[in-house]
Image (cartoon, rainbow over all chains, first blue to last red):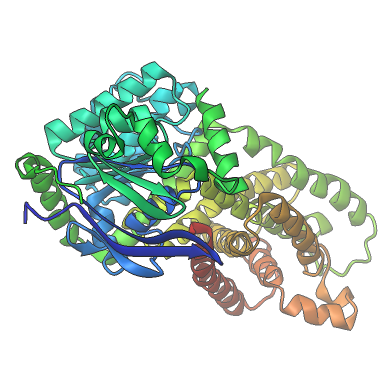
Length: 268
Length: 282
């Protein structure tokens, strides 16, 4: 059981109306990996992620998380994952503690253990002192860490992070990377994240899948991908090699862009 | 294919996860379902505790209805309200209207939560959709209770006297909660269809006033033209007002029918809204 892959995506397709967002994508994430889905806006990263976290039912193909089918045993899959969406999803009308406490209740953590668990995950994200402050007083980096704390409340085996560092300043970004690495190293959590920052994929991710226009273009370690393109190539070159000249105007719809901007504004 | 061999790292999360799962499985599913609804109501109470301004601003409108409308129309003296003073007569109507106005915009919160990713996060917990909908709807009920109690107090200050015991007061609050559930669910259904906040604002305003006037909130149904009498018979607001009037003022009525209609429409609302939020999840 320990050797089973964390995520197996097999021939996944999903369309919004007549727009194909994900087109026959297959890849596998090994347990303990920090796995990056890299691609420009509108590449199908978020749709892939939403299929993994049971929000979207695939049109065809399948998604398995630790052996369980995301579409068929969605409740079991939900218990094994922690999910942080791209937009800032912490409730600013509450304190940090209350934000995490809600998810402790929704994950059925018994009342006796709840307070201890909530304090524990907040502390793991260095939010002990800010726990009882309103989220409105938090910085962008703190909000992201709070959302990680929320996602950790059910001790997930797989953390799914959609653009976790979008809009963060370099220092907050590095701090978040450190936390993500620690979760993997100390607790064996598998991490699947999307990003369109090359640097992030390069430094943080063990393996990278490159998506463009809903199709998987390349997959492998950062260095393997670079070697495929040529001697001395950077990850940017890899990106440009597969997507570059084809970068088009349909990079995400208006709602997508608005949501990204709103996130960036709230963080900034 | 990715090839990182990482089998030795997984142990910790594995064990603790198994432990959580078994302790959850041993609990009663109905208790779990209710505890999730409760969790969303607790959040609403926390919201109210942190920001009371909305609580106060929301009291302006019902106060104006009671003071201006009630004060003026009480002078007419030819509205057949039985032996109930006019201000007392419209108090249950004003309560119902407040509940309607609070709850009919709950769908906007849902659209906001969709855009901000909160909804996605809720949907990725083991919580069934219907429990999320019910939780939000009962949260509207929680907010409505604070409003209803405030209106009762304001009306009392204005001279309205109630004829109710503790059980009748509690039953009245139950009617308030179930009414809020219905209107919040209507709003969430609309949110699932319209998907935009501004459209939802427009529709909310467009349906709430007609619902209010096509009911017995401000005047007896007997005063209405026949076609409107028929409309008001299919208006859940009428039954909510009837129930409140009966419970608070002891006017004659069919409480069993009122409870049946209010309860059944609330339940139907939850079922319909559960289906509608699927569209919001995409």
